[in-house]
Image (cartoon, rainbow, N blue to C red; front, side, top):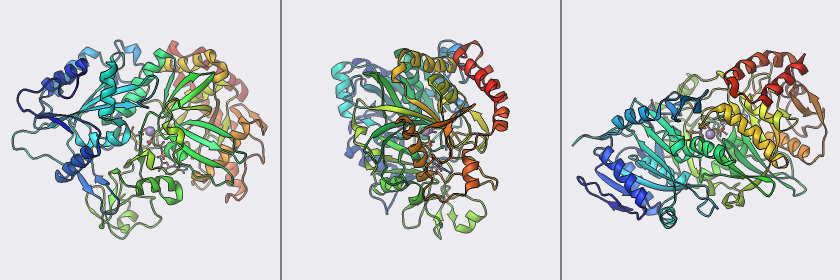
Amino acid sequence: MTATTTTTNIPTTGGTSHAELAQWVAEVAELTTPDRIVWCDGSRAEWDQLTSDLVDSGTFVRLEQKPNSFWAASDPTDVARVEDRTYICSPDEQGAGPTNNWMDPDEMKGLMSDLYRGCMRGRTMYVIPFVMGHLEADIPMYGVEITDSAYVVVSMHIMARVGSAVLKQMEETDAGYVKGLHSVGYPLEEGQADVPWPCNDTKYIVHFPHERTIWSYGSGYGGNALLGKKCYALRIASAMAHDEGWMAEHMLILKLTNPEGKVHYIAAAFPSACGKTNLAMIEPTIPGWKAEMVGDDIAWMRFRDGKLYAVNPENGLFGVAPGTGKATNANAILAIEGGNSIFTNVARTPDGDVWWEGMTKEAPEHLIDWHGNEWTPADGEAGTLSAHPNSRFCTPIVQTPCAAPEFNDPNGVPISAILFGGRRKTTVPLVTQARDWDHGTFIGSTVSSETTAAAAGAVGVVRRDPMAMLPFIGYNAGDYLQHWVNLGKEHAGAMPEVFLVNWFRRDADGGFAWPGFGENSRVLKWIVDRLEGNVDAVETPIGLVPAAGDLDTDGLDVSAEQLEAATRFDSEEWRAEVPLIEEWFTKFGDKLPPELSAELDNLKKALD
Ligand code: GTP
Ligand code: SPV
Ligand code: MN
């Protein structure tokens, strides 16, 4: 760690010859008045120092049963992204509409400067140089996060490529970079003891896309505080991608090899907590198929040589813990067994391991729940969860046994199919193929899903979540949809086939009609067979569905009724869906791409 320490006269350049960066750091220090500034080098020594500091301060508990791994519990009010506190501060309101919160950028800066003034008093200000994607990329996508949270620093060590090598290259090229300013908003007075999870009831997660700048205040939770992730790699990057003709999407990237050895790369957009990490780490149940992960949450996609290439900008997994077990996602369990991980808001075992609902069938006899209380299976039966539903594991991707070597390729992988999906109890069949790009864009633009614990607010409410990007589009959502349509026209031959999937439809008894997880490989097989031209499909008003018998159900333990419940196209359900889509589209006014209203008309006609 290159520590540059003074208490009164905050140093200006600190560790860098990048004059503009030095100046920005000095300005922030003057505003926030930390006790000291540390330029993060990303080293193992830095990790060891900070994790042991975090243990000493009570934020972390070192896990006895996993090497170099730590448990943390957040403040109970700081457990998820806060969408109602998230803003896109474009110069005019139209630039953020109709799906984002907006405030005039100057007004927001005034308001937040008041919050930031003195907010790092008594704390260390860390400067984290990072790159999203690869340092060797043609256009390295630099960022610098300033934060007063050591938890954020060590999490960024896992989630992004950080430290001295990045800073050095930035200095050598005098590079531009995305500025991320983060504070937990909990200054310490002389002699005041810290709390394990400092945060503030007032929270702002704010983006100034035209300045490629992020200001975050009051939260320590992942998506609000690890600014390389949702704030940069989706909200800011989507605005850059719109300007520059590429795509920044909330998608996993999966490498699939069929029994003949043919490789396809597939990207899939599902809303938060709807199965991206699980599909990215799938273990196929059908013989001869191999699946490897390139990314589990974000895809940056650019056109090259007539193809669409995707890169995973991240370096780690920030995965939903509950539901992750050997039976559902063995690869994730193996990854965390490797250690070097941070667990937030899960339960602890008395012997220093972690547990959460769904890790094993039977809960351990004794746990310490995420609130720090004693917990037994009887509490579970009474409805008390030991882990928060949005508790997370944070683990390096290289520890994933199923990581594809292409994860390290700065050029990415050529995508042949895009899947959209969500959590729908009804209506949406297991798999549908779009007729063409515009129809695929229509399907993506109307994706709907029941809300989850990944964001603060009600759970289980159906909402439209276009391309699973509703909370992450960094500009006008109508312009975003038009961008999709336009790319299809400009790069007609390069566009992937589009599919809609739903693992979450219910049967007559209310259970999941489809077993999901590894069995989703059967759906992937049909998709690849479609790409390869090996199977026909049946036309329906909503698109192409598998012909009877074409979905491989060999050895699948599912009744014919359940299979029917999972795969059925029901015109009544879709007639009920149309008004909801119409209502959704009215939000966009004259920003609705005409291609999409034409698709809606097609759907209505086909259903009549
Ligand atoms: P974010 O990290 O919030 O973006 O979530 P995600 O989209 O990566 O979702 P993830 O794979 O973590 O899954 C979320 C929850 O859905 C977990 O509890 C999973 O166990 C569950 N889940 C994932 N895939 C399936 C599936 O095929 N069927 C069923 N029934 N549940 C699933
Ligand atoms: C999501 O909510 O989509 C996540 C977790 O992947 S967070 O990083 O908090 O956004
Ligand atoms: Mn996500």
